[in-house]
Length: 130
Image 1 (cartoon, rainbow, N blue to C red):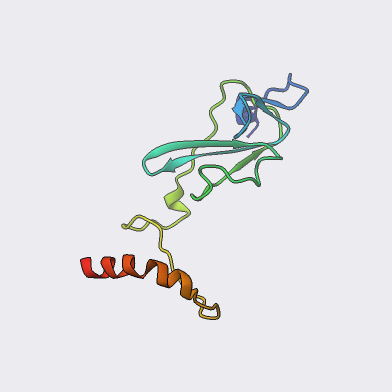
Image 2 (image 1 turned 45 degrees about the horizontal axis):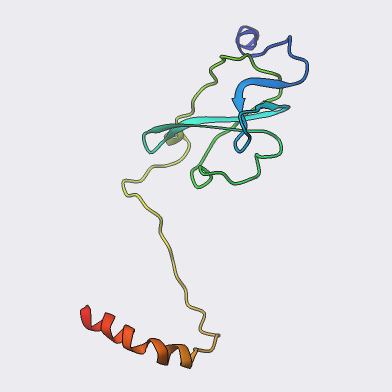
């Protein structure tokens, strides 16, 4: 582990900056403080996501997918390559793709008779086309 630590951590940096790791949502500013890093294959594309302490709980464009984050407290060297995770080892894969939705009507609400009357012709036309 000590050999690995020498390859990853930069002991000369005192302000906690992780050179080469930009936090999601920041304008090309390197992460300062704790780094949360995730690199994995999602839909056959390698996705790398970096967060700092403030942004880790915020949603990003990859939030719908599962991630495994490495928490790095010590400053990293500029060109360090952190490991990638094989998500299929942690999350089961299915042959189908997409999102399943279950829609349950709330029957406690009153129907809007005026709206139904105004849109009835359009609904009849849709039903006729089927």
